[in-house]
Image (cartoon, rainbow, N blue to C red; front, side, top):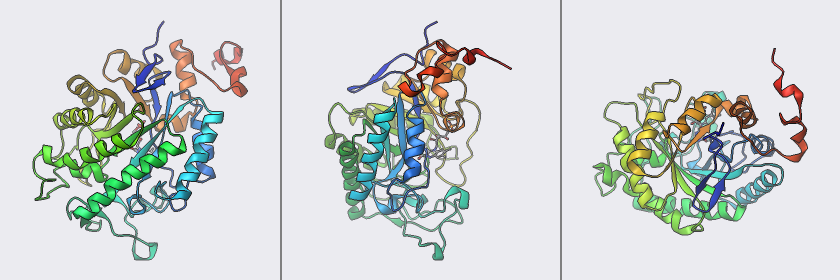
Length: 366
Ligand SMILES: Cc1cc2nc3c(=O)[nH]c(=O)nc-3n(C[C@H](O)[C@H](O)[C@H](O)COP(=O)(O)O)c2cc1C
């Protein structure tokens, strides 16, 4: 049996041993953007999940681009030094290649951690001013963001470039721009949140302009062979919002801007968004993007079992899959998937004695 999920894939100059990625997952455990020991434990563990690629959580390119006070950032020398230590740790002890998701939370910034309610920070929580394409709040209980000026747009564009350069210096293998879940870049593309009257608002082509400028600027700032991708939305799940057609058009434009891959997610543009949360939520959008944009396509969302992931790749619906909660539930998900699909996966030498070939217990079932 040959597994499609465990076949290699190349993104730019980066060889990946299989098609599995650990999806970026905010840990809300940083201090002014600086990674903590929690990140060493968390990412060190997931660097040995069997996934070929581990993507570091949404990382704010400026302080005000963080979602919460605990979000990771890459806007200071301290942030960079901590990321470099984290990358060195994961590289020394783990098997995965390391990506990072660069992000700006836009109008969804200045919020509480999920376990503190995920609502906007109140006046006593040290809140900060949020920025967005247009002064439209994320929802009824959210503050009105300030409409970005051309100076804001230049600063944020430079912020993405500088953070990308910091990520390269820290030893990261791949960069992913966060263009989904209602955060700043998505909020420029979506007609729900972008009502600008200048050249960055109006038709899709104009709404994509700013994210594409950022994509091109980052592309020009990082090594040619380093994969650059973006997570984008397959569907806003709200009347008048972005559709799978728009996702295909955006992916085509990103490919033209020099990107090597996209990851198709959905939802999060406003409190009115009503995603249909079923298994393989975003697979049909990914299939469409892959076919119409001709760019390496990953998808994410309610993918949990090895057979499910194998079918998505084997049937050509996506080139790669990303898993989030399934990896938290089972940090060696990739090892178990390899066993289920009759494939090989690389393990650190310290744990090789638990490989199915040498450990009879792997076959025991209750
Ligand atoms: C704890 C947690 C943190 C998350 N943080 C991020 C993030 O930093 N960036 C992002 O694009 N998605 C984030 N997500 C969304 C996941 O990457 C993923 O798209 C979503 O959970 C659906 O995939 P799943 O069904 O495999 O969990 C997060 C999800 C979880 C559970």
